[in-house]
Length: 92
Image 1 (cartoon, rainbow, N blue to C red):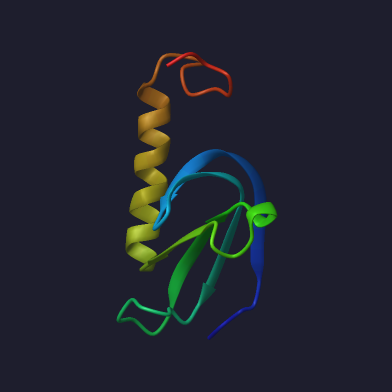
Image 2: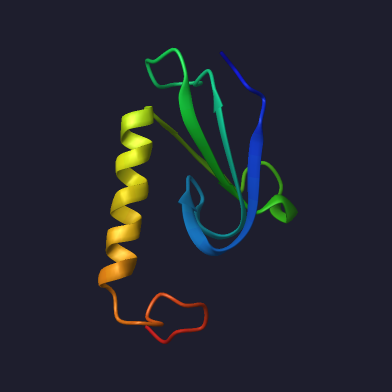
């Protein structure tokens, strides 16, 4: 069942689309019917820069299991990184 509940968060980062890299400033997360994945419902994440228009968007459609595994992997990677390494403005 689609909830139509969407969580949005302002973010800082980059994504690679068909025309190359672009800044991403917003992520939208919601459960809905996927456009491409072969499942009834997926957790969908849209990474976008609304100021650049609809072409500045990268979308992923994940099963619940994949989404939860991704959350765990993100937490583990951040927990293992030295403090502040993944912070905004950190030198690469």
